[in-house]
Length: 154
Image (cartoon, rainbow, N blue to C red; front, side):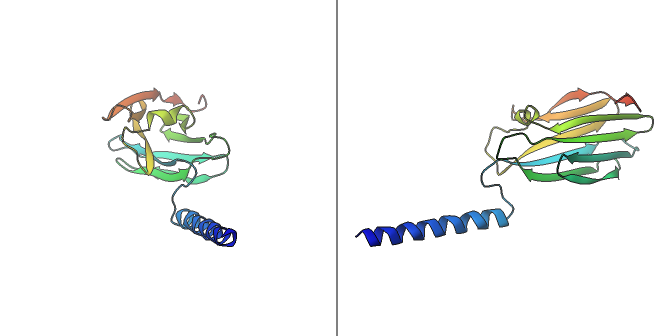
């Protein structure tokens, strides 16, 4: 009987390991939350320059995006300690801004009422500043977080 239980335990361990590998290979987040970050230009007839990155991951750029275009990416949050941080540097004419687009505090405004495979943090670049869509209410609530600054003061 003990030999049979040991065999069943080994089968269970192999199946669990296989499922973990499949989940990781499929691009999902197994041990942590998945996040989709979107930084969208909503300034008509204007192109902005955007460069987003974390300490370990450069999203690419700087990238020029036109009206209603965006820079976006997805990632799994750091499982060792929830310390994942992404920031963007955005330029428009003689103005710029550098700000966090994801960190331990901001992520709470991106968590929707219904459970998702990926939570969404959406930033809107507007003529008067930078807005985060607060998804906690279940609606679409743009919350202004930052103003533009003259180049060199950001």
